[in-house]
Length: 202
Image (cartoon, rainbow, N blue to C red; front, side, top):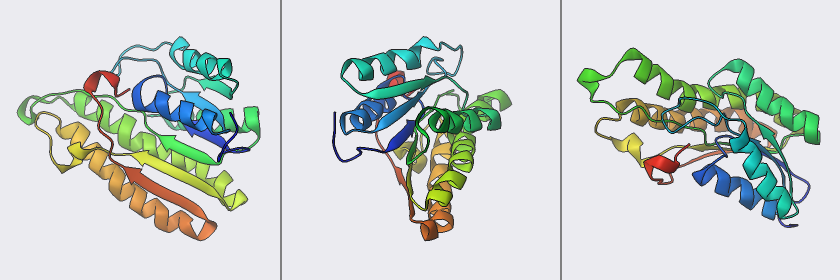
């Protein structure tokens, strides 16, 4: 399980399934200690199940890696803080943050409710803020770190997904801005636009 991330601590949000789970496994395989964050809700952001994150931790440990489960909600400031504290309490530092957590609430714009808008924007865009806001001071103190925020091709325009598209394109601007803020401290920030099927986006 040793590799290019040996000695590093990586936090991955939305790591219970899909891209997040695969990312957590890659970090562990390359030697990182991993905080697996996932609220355990469904793709629409309803429900919660702490065993979702724990299952991925168990998979990593079975392969010889080190990981801890963290079930907080990224859409809250308390959740963002708890995720960073899990890394510090368990492993003493935070080197890498991948904000992957996301949900969907599809609706045509003339039928979309405020709740549908807020739920999606809060997980994707506010979740980027809450996690980076609490991880960044520790990376600044270390004068090192890497942040990856997950955007989407939906940001170019997506029918009946205006909330998701707006949040994902907002992440691009957010990431460009934090790269300017944190670059002087040797902290890299990038956004990527992977493609995932809806049932595996959480």
